[in-house]
Each structure stands twice: as C-alpha cells, then as structure tokens.
Amino acid sequence: MSRTQVTNSYKKVGHVEANLASKKASLRRKFRSARRTLSTPQQQNAAIELARNARGYRQLWSGTRILSYSAISGEIDPQILCDRLSASIYHPRITNYRMGRMQFLATDGNTQRNKLGIVEPRIDGKQLIAQQFDAALVPLLAFDRQGNRLGMGGGFYDRAFAFKHQSGYRKRPLLIGIAHHFQEAESLTTESWDVSLDAIITDQELIIL
Image (tube, rainbow, N blue to C red; front, side, top):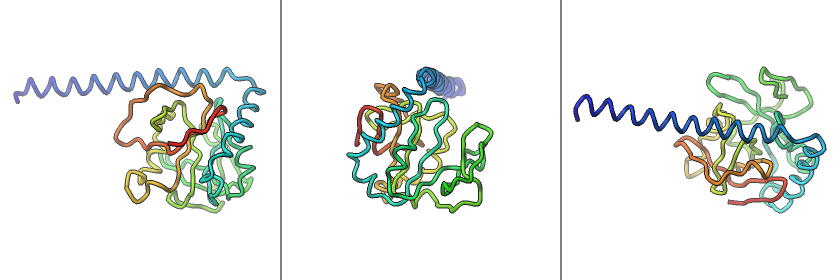
C-alpha cells in the first residue's frame, strides 16, 4: 500500500469516528433536553411507576447488594424502588474524572456533592468492588432493545464493568438501565468497549434481555 493510500485510509477512519461522535452528541442533546422538560409531579409519578414495573424482575428483588445512583438533570429517580428493596444499597463516588474512575460506597446518609453536582457518599462508608454486586441500576441518556446504552460520555460505567465482557461474569452483576420511556432509541451504534445491559426498567415497562 502506498503512502497516499495509507493516508487516505486514516482519513476515512477519522471521518467515520467524527460522524459517530457527532451523532452521539446530537442524541445526548436531544434526550437531555427531553428529560429537563418534565415537571416535578411528572418526575415523581415516573419514579413511582418505575418501582411498580420493577416488581416483575425477580432477579433484582433477590439481590442483597445493589448499586444505585443519585438522579440529576431529569434522570428518573430510583430512590422509591431502592426503598422497597431489602438489599444493601451502594452509590458510586467519582475518584478520577480524567480517567473515568469510580468507587462504590454504602449510602449511610453521609454525603456530599461533587463538582458535577451529583450527590455521592463520603469516603468513610463501607466499600465494595464492582464484581461484588448482584445488580447495578445504571442511569443513561438513551437505550435500545438490544441492550445498548448511551451514557453521558465519561465512560465511568463501561470502565467499572468492563469485566462483564469476560464469559465468567456474564450473569453477575446484572446491569439494569433505568430510564424514562421516551429515552428509547431505535438503534444505537456501539463501540468495542461498551458494556451492554441485561435489562431496562422504565416508567412504562420492564424489558428483560
């Protein structure tokens, strides 16, 4: 292959990557905007319906260690659902923003807001590693029915649960996307490092994959 052909090949790859990044950015703007239009009563009702729809997911209710999250920017709030679970609930705490790293701490009420405005546990709580959870409730901006997820773009969850690509970890922990029903996309383009969901719970239905 000539130097010109190699150069053109790299240009094509760069063009494809740029198009993919642009498409993802557009989807993020679309669904973030849609979430923010919800009123407080609509958000509260969505959280109630989410908990109701989760009742049919036996594997979630049998778990004893569940990772959840603190809702921001119109995310559907999993707190009502978590209050009904008999499991110990943990939340993520960002430890390295540049590298996209998190740790997972028990939610004992000792919290603080990070620089993104997310409420997270302080460092002194009981800690687990990602492999120790029975299930993780994962926030997202968009999902499809193949179990693909579009997040905020930081890669925190994909890095934390990258071990799920290994055959021995396919079943645990269950990764459960939590979303408003209107966050569904027809099809999402994925990258090799994206970790797929095992189920999605919305304010309208339970989707087990």
